[in-house]
Length: 427
Image 1: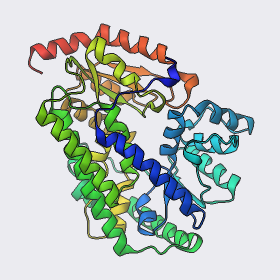
Image 2: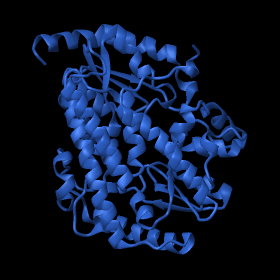
Image 3: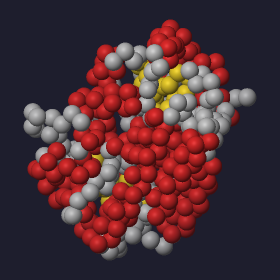
Image 4: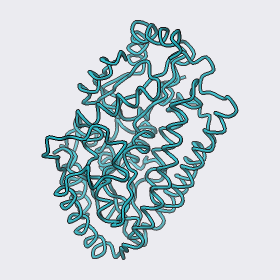
């Protein structure tokens, strides 16, 4: 069997069903795009504005994950290089631009409809340049949100306990003011240029549905964390969360998150597991390896090692929940601290440490992350960390054989002894 044809084994019906429904949804979006404009947005953009305005949108990183899964990454990166764009920076965001430039007629699922608008947050110079170049290539509007930092010295350390309800006390009001102003500017552009009709009342409904959805993610996360052996692995939870998150704030997204929770709960109650002989519990720190999801399951037979944690489900559980009376300001509070949650040493390292303890993690594999402080915190906790310098969607930076060899040595030499001691002590 070739590396490209390797497939992971899903244990949840909801994961397979979501993929089928996503394909159907995408076909509907392509059909509607012939009649009305759509948007292309980064994962860190406030999608809820587009949903409340009745505008279809596609998420850049979801499209990149699909391109990677369909083994289109190399061709997309080559097309970027041939047109004079960098092919070694922000690859996860740039694959779709490369695929469009390639124009080979081999795009998955019929190809991405041309958006009338692109939007994201300026987290890096490269991330902004990708969207700007894309918009220029196709004559679309590009709206970028500023990325701000908290100037205060008193930094919140247990943000996951407070952000959902106490965000007005946790977040800097000036940052919220700026985000609200930018949201209002975006709404005006969406209404004028996309012919939409944004409604604050509709946004309130979207926020309520999103919170219902996110509460189900939290319950699912907690079930997996406290169940030994784990009922499912990231092979199921990563795609199930990734797909349904981009329907956040809709009944479709809420129902998908509920179905995920109910199926995981049923497996726990039935005593079913991802790996019956679970010996080691692993955390995958970084973006999904979408082109080879089977890699996560490779280590179950030889080591009894199960990847039980990824940022996808846990970020959905801890990072997005927001309750408040002002829908627009509450929405702003959802996105203002996102860079801190994922990247800022105090916020992200404390969260990774908390999640590793909650999930009873024995070892961590970190791929392509700026994770020095997280790795230091985890190692201080006695949890070994393997740091791999690679980009998830760039096949030039890693190979299946190389990853298997690296991770196998890591499990043998460092993780297995830790896991054995924990089992002896009853975890």
